[in-house]
Amino acid sequence: MCKPISSSTPHENESKFGERVVNGIVWQYASVLAQAVIQIIAMATLSRLLTPSDFGIVGISNIFVGFANLLARASIGSAIIQRRELQRDHISSGFTLSLVLGTLFTCCFFVIAPSVSNLFHSPTLLPVLRWISLIFVLSGFGSVSEALLQRNLEFRKITRVTLISYAIGYVFVALILAVAGFGVWALVWASILQSAMRSTMLIISHQHPLRLYITITAARDLFRFSGGFSIAQLFNYCATQGDFFIIGKEAGPTALGLYSRAFQLIMIPVQYIGQALENVMFPAFSTVQSDRGRMKRIYLVSVTIISLICMPIATFMCVASYELAYVILGEKWLAVVQPLQILCLGLTFRASYKISDSVSKALGHVRLRIYRESIYAVSVVAFTWIGLRWGLSGAAVGVLCAITINYIVAAAMVLHWLDMSPYEFVRCQMPGISISLVTLLALLVAKSIIGCTSLSTSLALVAYIVIALVVSLTSLAAIPQLLGTHGRDTLHNVLIRLNSRRLRIIPCWVIERIGLRP
Image: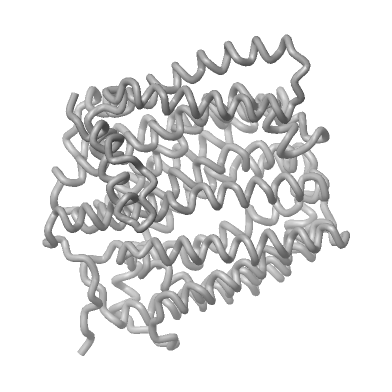
């Protein structure tokens, strides 16, 4: 007889559950700074060693590799997280299905690689696609372990795995091979090694029986959720990669390489803030899915966190876009400045809609999610194709229109499901809006002054960073009411968790001031 796998229970004490969620958020965001620094260093170095065409070729291959990898493992992992009662047969069946699908897609890519290469008129793409398709099998080994870690809110382990595998498996290897003159293959081999290293570490972090075993009942249970989930994820993937496909097909690898660098810059805060929070919130929402009141409170707190962090960052990146491109990417990448400024306007929307997506997944509203994702996918492809007539900047405007539509539709659905008013939704984002407006004013004044001096581009960027940080933090310290109720409560709890560690670097009076009610 199959025994249930122990995990969080919907009936656990609310204070204990809240502590676990806050702890998960702390560990997710503890890795944000380290990952961002590593990625920025990697971008700055690799952008000077490789060409836009190299990044464009890998970008094209990642469109198809990511698509197949999504179908091979992502939906199975989400089904394991979402199930209220998980049996051992579900784990064995999920592991087996991930490997079988990964192997199947690797074989398929060896066959279709010539057709894809001809479609994009790039002979180099043929061997790149065939070798990088090995990621399907490698990532399949660790997908179930990662899902189980997320289900149990063990984000400390995931953080460790992500940091080490990216820093050593990808960045270190890519830099060595790029210096050695491997060109595009530096990125290919680094991606393969990172995937192998990450799966190995995930299995070690959460061990489960690595047996090839499938039961019809367990497979049916997983596919009951993951079948519809995969369709929704399919449309979402088409939306997130549709602009890459259109630009790569119509404008070529070099144009795609330029656009991908602007996109990667804007995705650093989205991935390490929005995605990190989503990784915590989906298991949390799934655990309390029967209590809509608690879901509403968690949702409002999540949106508040996103707006407080992402809006000031978007403001800074938009004002300092030239300096960011020049210092991080190099002089040959300055064509990304205008597309980067346009994409910055949708940064908060990209991060925030992920939380709405977590609610729909946790509640099992698969059909409505499919409708929304299909609208999103069609919008991205259509608007990018139309906008590309005016170059990369026009394509960026098209993408901004599509992400705005998706953000509004996703939020409207959550407001309906959680019985929430538009006023509550807008109110929880006012702290972020207020701080970003103050930051914008300070940065514009600083930019006009620095423009009249002979300050170097690097020093100008440093000045903008310091000004943005000082203004934002000073505003919060001087007027903590800007945080709002949800923002103050959340930041207060997070600071207490951080100060509970051996290293006490946060003064108690700061925590007490934030904890005071307005």
